[in-house]
Length: 99
Image (cartoon, rainbow, N blue to C red; front, side):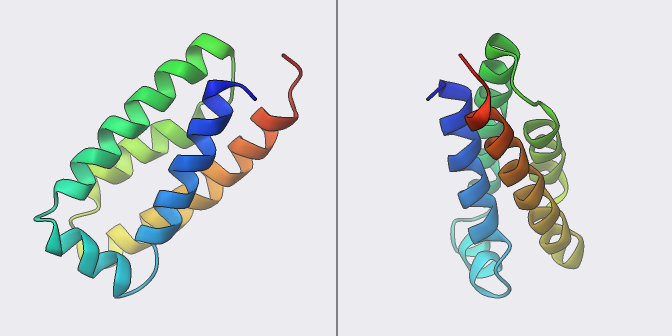
């Protein structure tokens, strides 16, 4: 499995967790919003490997935007949900691609 595919799966699972109503929001708030900073760095690293390995890039780019705007309550939830879906799709395509 390519590094970018593994990172896409990890990012997708993390975004899906943050998209769970009340649980994801409580986690972000309890970490003092540093979870959003961690996700920004994770998406940046994932994007780097996606460029390097010619994997889909829309998920990590959307993840970077989500990390910047997710502090807004309802918008953050919707962005996490959409980003998780896009990342799962990107991860599936990256996993199926031949090396």
